Length: 396
Image 1 (cartoon, rainbow, N blue to C red):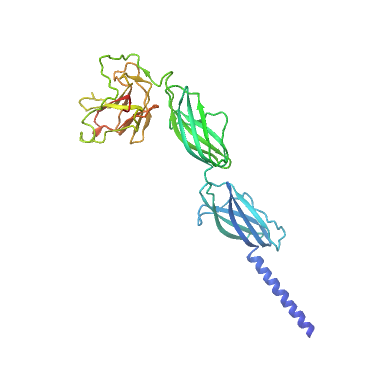
Image 2 (cartoon, helix red, strand yellow):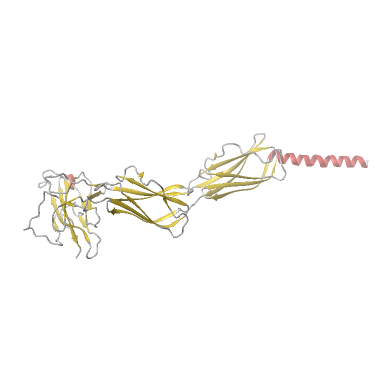
């Protein structure tokens, strides 16, 4: 009787133990201890550890850009278990997500699949690569230098940059192409930054060139800075004198001429023209600059049904100059470098630009600062003209 009692008790104990084990296997083929995400340079490392695994087929890693969004598998194939026949001690795993972008939060779920096809999810967890820029640009300029254009830039600090490329186009919206044959080496990791220079010798006088600076990062590819622009003068002078214009000895040419302003413009002028104004150049005493010396308005009776802005450019001796560049912008977003008129044009000007309902501004674009005239428009779309004279002067 006593022997039978012990046998029954042993049967009960064994059966109870097996029942508990079966319940654990059915409900969870994997007991997960930890699931974490960590940023490593330009990738996110996902790691997890199991306490035990039984009847386990493997893992999938799912990703979304929002916590409640659509999670998509990012591993190409099921990640197999390290314990192929099951293990009581569990194992450690790692997966690297390399298809990531800066400043984007990624949410991850871990999917466990057992041999019967049952699926269990863990997570979500999240991570974001807030990677500081590898380089900080403190200045970037382009200017004429002899027969070329010198591009100069300064960095405040550099992280993982490999070097630089110079990109160029012949208009601001054009296709930029690299012009340096070999990468310009950076200091790569210096905290104090550096000074750099590159000269573009493949240029044509009078053509405006646009430049961008491209930084090459060890981990994140390329980053672009800019745009700056410059042009070189015509040979031997920044501008040339029109050969068909002769100086009149009887003409009085003042070194700092007063402004001849049409009273129909600006505050107190005609309706819709009150905002036509001059924006003075920011110059110091003794500095040369382009001063607006004359602004004339032609109404519908005076314009001959024309609707243009005419710009004349004079040197310090009141002689007409060629080879300068007039930069026109507008409230509608236009930005154009005007083409000089041909020899003998009847406008007696350097530049002529037809207006079409926008509000226009113009200044001279050379090595010297320039006044600008702003707010020119066609009031009620009537055909009117503006005639502007710029003269190279020295601030007294």
